[in-house]
Image (tube, rainbow, N blue to C red; front, side, top):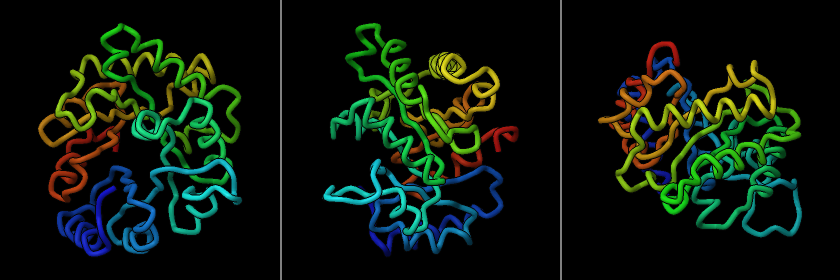
Length: 244
């Protein structure tokens, strides 16, 4: 819940000035819904795509405050988020709701990022693997229209978001490897091997290179560090060549 029209355009101008067009990584911005049409029209010159921060599972009806897949497409989005930690733990979305949203978005032709991750209380209780496995399997079981081209998974340990804390590269790598195993169990080994799994948890210029160098980490879901073009570009430049 950040940004204005003026700030959005200034951000994109600065990204272009800093060389975002020449960055070979796939870059997607998820602005507030109010800025989607504006940014969708402007990002092409910056080598960037746009997505919606959330999505609803029905196309129309009396669902005040929600946004349908076709509305996101009409606004110029090509991506969406499903199950972001703030939706799960602030708004109260269940695994079932997240799955419905993921299915609806993929069926509409959008590409989705499924977010999974544990709370600090769950981590301290030794339930990290149980919680994340449940989230992954609930979202992917019997999922239709899914492919390695339209699905990305983001592991975002909730205790590390906005706190300045970050999982060690080794911790993140272990969880990413486990997520890949769980994806294989639900879909297939081939699907799991080719699925991009990102890390999201206080990624910033100072730690991006070390985190992104781990073999099972295929990118980053960036929060606060993406609000400034200079810090965001530093993270993009830290992406290993093979993941660009």
